[in-house]
Image (cartoon, rainbow, N blue to C red; front, side, top):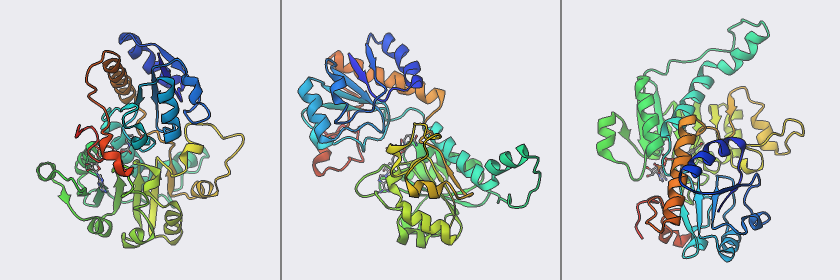
Length: 346
Ligand code: NAI
């Protein structure tokens, strides 16, 4: 039995057939996994979780006590898991790649929307306002796109940028220079990327090293009017510094698919009650800020791939075989997420 936490109707639509094909039985729970809800996993041998489920030391300990042997993440990022606590008690598997194109295409959709202001044009023409004043954009061709992180998603984004005729800079401590040469992109330091990019898009994981990397001093190095896109993780950006940058005009536009306090709101409907997060509320007031609620992954192809890999990960566990997408827990010794996760260094 697999206890599937934070199960929305669309999760069930994709997971249930994949589980059936693999002979797995799912218990679909709308609640997120937390210290308060962990008891709902009673009787299950596995849990299946998503980005906002909490696998803190307390929850991991409780799962292990109940006899749950594996947590199958139906996502790539695993910053919500206390890996050190899981070591030796719980296998943790993930879906390392499902559709990098889904996320990169969403990042580019944000660039195009913010640049050509189609979100505003849509509102205007519905109100019979056909004026162009305030809708001026710029050619992407020949502009510089800076990508922080050149993994699967960063590379897909690089190809899209090159397709638009952009100069593409990448900053990645583990940059594959053979790929960079063949893709026609240039590996640079983070400082150079900040200084030369017209558009900066974040595609690195959240680690203790990258947390808050877009802070006031980093923003001060960027070109005036830079467009900042974040489909990585909300905590990569110090949101108060972002607000200051937007107010001063140093940041010309921001596309945010993730937000540092998103767990409280994203994936849920607060249209009737409103929100009490003043920072998020302030962000929604800028015409040059586009917020989407962690939907970059949300394509049919990605959901099918997530369901298929999650079912295969769980079936491998129940069959007693090796777990190909197991996260390296050894590197969690400092509480850090290993950047080589999945490379099986244990
Ligand atoms: P990946 O593991 O293929 O690539 C990550 C890259 O970042 C690696 O090349 C790594 O060397 C690099 N990196 C590590 N530390 C860095 C640093 N300090 N500076 C610059 N680069 C650094 O991961 P993938 O699939 O490309 O995903 C990237 C991130 O996107 C994930 O960690 C996840 O947080 C986020 N994501 C967001 C989704 C969404 O729906 N918004 C969906 C999927 C992933």
